[in-house]
Length: 358
Image (cartoon, rainbow, N blue to C red; front, side, top):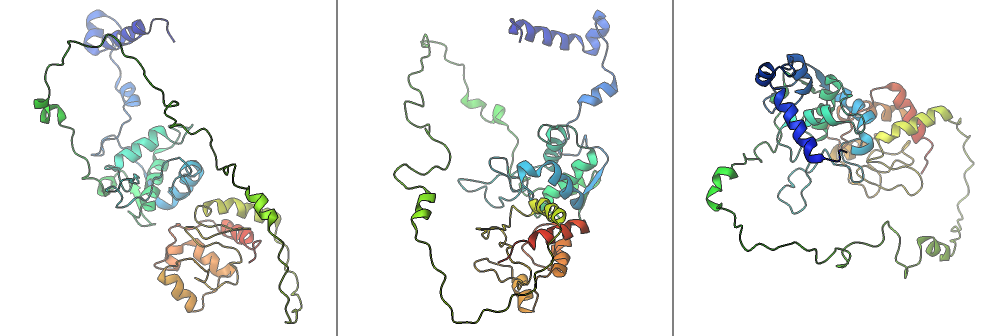
């Protein structure tokens, strides 16, 4: 940084002023900027579509691009990860004390989403997205907010046809004229000679001294409580033990590893493994051989319950059909996932899920 910041600011401002066409020609300093040089900097997109480049992107393509570039921070379904922003959801929450402000619930113009993604995302790799990838990502964000169908394709031609729900929630800031009668000449008399800081936040004890989820000192740790519990003996039974079925062929470890990677798309809603619980979607332990809509404690859609009542059982074949395009396979399903486009991904995730029994 310069030792003379004020001179640096003045010098920068002077250089910018002298670079204007009129002064450049009059004073012989510099030259007018060429149209292509101006275009390289003039990247903003306006609500009326001005600045949008030619291009297009589908929801399906957007899901893939979003998963690779955005999901690590914003979640596979734009639901947000940790403190990173949610991009979807929040419908009808703006009148609450804790509104959920997302692209679907709060943002007034789609151009803002396109412009921000194209110029500033992904984090650490700004301006690496092509125009088509940006259209695809924005299409997927719209789909995640239930604003378009899964076969929607966003282009520069239909861009203005998409109206966000909160388009009328913003007004032009006219305080300069509307509130001018409140203003007067500022009082510049009897001012204090100096401003003093009289108290710090630490003195007020409003800053937490500890972080994390550690239990208070007067409560035993969870591990100690678990150790104190006596081991439960298995209940005796008089039922004869059935002869064990022949062991199934061990799944291909490489395919299972691929499936674990594909399952990252599912982890926002589903859990597997020890201690798995129902989340946005049901836990998936022992899914093969399970009647559809039968996990205890999970509230299924009516269509999923009806399918189970009609005899739908999850097998590798039925699950593969469902995962390819859930909303086509079962109208009315609560699952918002667009589907797995690659057959190899479906085989891999089936192999992975098969490793988790009841």
